[in-house]
Amino acid sequence: MNGTFSYRLLFAFSIGFIALAIFSGQYLFFAVVPAVMLLVAGLAEPRILFFCLLFTIPLSTEYHFSRSLGTDLPDETLMWILTPFVFFMMARNWRSMFRLFSNPLVIVLFISLCWTLITVFTSISPLVSFKYLLAKIWYIIPFVAGTWLFVESKKDLNRIGLVLLIPMLFAIIFIMIRHANQGFGFEKVNAVTSPFFRNHVNYGALLVCLIPLAWAFYRMGNKLWLAALLIMMTGLILSYSRGAWLALGAGIIVVWFIRMRMLQWLLAVSAVFIIGISAWLIQDNRYMTYKPVYERTIYHQSFDKHMEATYNMQDLSTMERFFRWIAAVNMVKENGLMGSGPNSFYPRYKSY
Image (cartoon, rainbow, N blue to C red; front, side, top):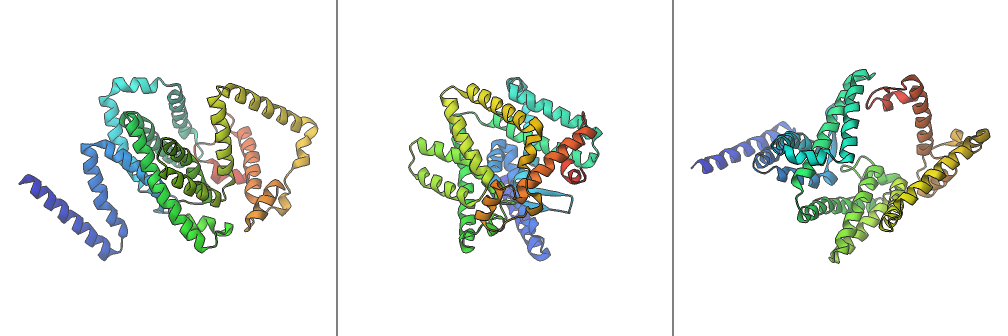
């Protein structure tokens, strides 16, 4: 009887919010019902929330409540819901958490979070910095502590791969169909990646992170993943994201050095090369010979012109990076120890 009453109550609740969404025109009310269902499921089994969070990452979209307040829906909402659950489970499994917090990488992450907290109080924009700190917490707790608590076996690792790759493949196919209608043009690539991605850079970044997962599934013997891998590689090429292409190539090189147990040699050679080239450029101000042609720096609509501008140092985005590096050096002179505060760089750097 109680179970029947609960289902009736849930049904009435669902109908009520659906009707409210339709008649008010505020379609966000549609999200209330699945949100409540997820919350109820999370009370019984928080792992459900964790895997739902991973599933929604490739399919989430930015939503702005105002010019200064925005979020990603639904994945960031799931982070908010999951964070207190994970805190509660951390308290219940505190002995297990000692092993996690003794990991050197987690120690560095914790020190970084503590320093962020300190610099919030000295920030030139305390409210902006405090919002950044909160966001760091609801990212770190579900993805670091949550993974430690919820991933218990190799099967769970396989599930993580699947719940990330399946929605990503859907997003890629959706974007490629839209891109095909635009002739796969470079000038339209940012527009076709919405609503799932802000721009082609974000799209390429997630793609290059998930391609190794598809490769791993293919190596495990399932030939269907070869088709998925080809779709993902095609999506990466058509993302026109230069950074993602370089990241994939660099990742392959690093993996080879790891397998050869020669990573330390790669790091040493890289450090020597960077120090050597920096010293050579600084000597007699030689770097000025290679300064960008900022007077003719524009954003190109054609990809071949975009690439040509990149190696000719006439690309707008490349020049903007130089501006930001220069601004960062000047800002360090003013706020050398504490900095200007978390998340305060972008609104202020142009004046430097």
